Structure formats: C-alpha cells, structure tokens
Length: 379
Image (cartoon, rainbow, N blue to C red; front, side, top):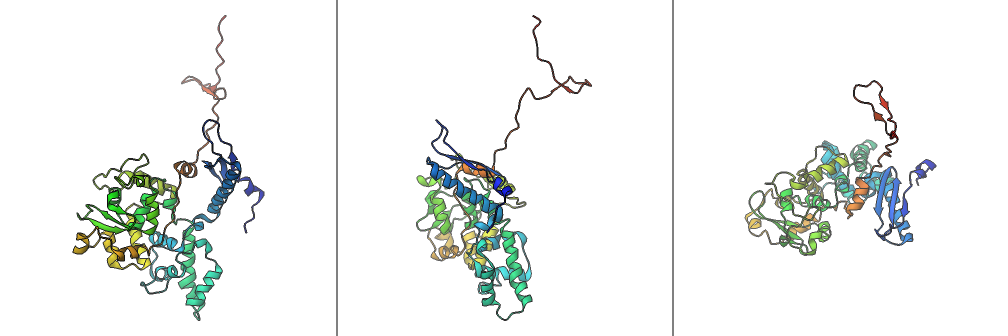
C-alpha cells in the first residue's frame, strides 16, 4: 500500500469543471496530476458521473507515474522489447526465450501475466517447479537475474511507441507489429482485399512483385473494425488524420507517416529506431511464440512457394493459427483531444502586460532600459 504525503496530495489538483454554456454540454477534467497537465472532456453531462471519471483518471495517471509501463504490459511483451533493444547474449537470452520451442524459459513461465502481477510468490512457484534441488548460484544466474532485467526494462520501454503515438496512426503501427508488413504494403491495403470474418488479407504488388496472403491477428480484427474507413469498407484501410489516403512515395521508407513515427519515438525517449525495425520485432515475436520458421517467412514475404503465390487469396488455417500464438500488445482507443491533453500538454503563457514591459532606449544610447512617459498634448 502506498501512503501519500501532504506534498504528494498537493500534486493531485485536477478538478471537474462545469459545461461551458453554448459550447458543450459535457463536464471537463482540468488540472495537474503528478506534474502532468490535463484538460479533457468526460463525455458525460452528469456531475456525479464526471466526478467518478475524474477519480478513475487520477488513479490511472498515478499508477502510470509510479509503476510506469508495468501497469498494462504483459511479460511476453516486455521480454520481446528487452531482447530487441538490449540484445543480450548467451545464457541470459536463452533463459528468457529458450534454446528452441521445447526448452523451458521465462516467456513460457509467465507469458501473458501482467508484469505488475509478478511477485515473490509467483517466482517461488517457478523455482519450485523448474529448479528443484539446484544450487542458489544456478537459480540466480538462470532465473532471477534475467527476470529482474526484463521487469526493470518493462517499467521504462515496453509499448512506449504505441502509448506515445497519435490516435490516427496507432492502428497502423499496431498493424505493422502484428503482421510483419512493410509500410508501403500497409498504406496500399484496400478493404476489398481484407476479410475480417475469415481473418485474411491480400497484399497486392509487394516488393518482390507478387501478391501475398497474410493472416489477421485476433487483436487486429477489433482494431480494424473500429477504423473510420470501416464504415463503408471502400478504398484504403488506413487514412491520415484528415481522412485522406496516404501517398506512397515510390516505396520511400516511412511515406507520409514518417513524421508521426519520429514524434512518437521522441516522446517515448527512443532513438535510432525505424519503422522497418517492426518487421524484426514481428520475427522475434514469432520465434518466442514457437511459430515455425517456414510459416513465419511466408507471412513476412521472405520466402514463398509456387502454391502460396498462386493461391494468395485463399486463407491458410495453419498461418491463422500460427499468428495467434503471438501475444496481443498494449492498445487503447483514444480521442485526438484526449491524446493531445496527455502527450501535448498546454503550457501557460506568461502574463503580457504592456505597462510592465520595459521599453528599450534607442540604439546607441547608454541609458539601457527605461520607460517612456505617456504622451501628453500641448494644450
């Protein structure tokens, strides 16, 4: 249990504000929580309900400030993020991801468990199961050290790209992570080539000049169904924040969403990470999840057979089952206004009073800053 001192309580100054007459009928939340300024609509016209939403929002921001990404990240997600960024060698990597699909490892021990739910009791359960009779040094080296490394990393970097992405590009980035597609392939995807019911899509005229069938992850079915373009299911699947199709600049890396990616990385504090690196993330996810190398390469377009090229539009149940082995990632729907309040807080401008601003003397004068007396008529 965390006890808040009077100083900490003073930081929780967010309050509900009544609707502005003639502009909105919804109550708002405005103030500062743990140094983060928020100004967002509650979406409700009831003061009682608005107060409940304010309390819930305060708890969310407080948990995020104290625990970081631990509040919403699974161990599998944290492990992949750690392997991708830190690239540990030898026994530490094998302890986390395993030698092969049959070897025991931390990902199999904890998997979809939220990292903030991993405590000493759960660790003791794994030790009793896998390390019975082993020496303390072996337990520390093969279990406790890599486990601690992943948990510490999870509090800093896991899922920060999605959390710091603008709402209109967040589905696109999640799509890249869970399909291994290239950016140009994703922004050229049309609704006529995507079937959410059978969970299969076809990428046309890919980099190697052929069409490629790709399974749709179970998490993407819900995310794609909520896109603005899903209302008519005509034209491109992914649109810009203005509702226009992305321009494919001759397969130039990033296309029109490069600035959104750069901004998300900057806000997340991540450097030297490119959108194409998400393909490697998908490959690592598949490896840890136990996806066969053949299926993984066919999904990513690194290898194909004559059969898969000819029947790209025919769903492959083996590929659909394989992609479901990959754990879901952090994802939340968020309005543009709420996101700007969270990631682009307003800064209060200093009070500009012309009467208080010094007026500089003419150039070359040694009088420095001085005030000019108000003009008075000769009469």
